[in-house]
Length: 112
Image (cartoon, rainbow, N blue to C red; front, side):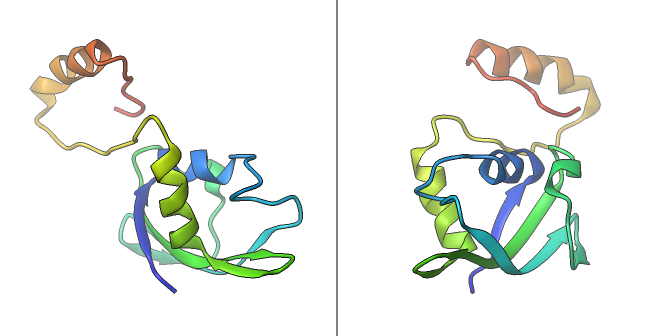
């Protein structure tokens, strides 16, 4: 299975999406392998992830008619999204300027 790199904000948004194209009513995940901020973890409570956590994840989404690679499904989901979540590292003195710039683009800063 493929591994996908994401962040806490994006994985929470994907995890909570109710679109049956990605999460049919009877679906569940299996064989998940997580790495959060460089630390391997067996089980992750997605809702407790920080928006700025750097997350690598792999596994399967099990559907009635088979299974699908978690990373592949998330990549398809990303293509339909109209907003993107990114983690940015910059000097503290530029934090307010970044927030204003992002606001001007109709975005928002999720974590600081």
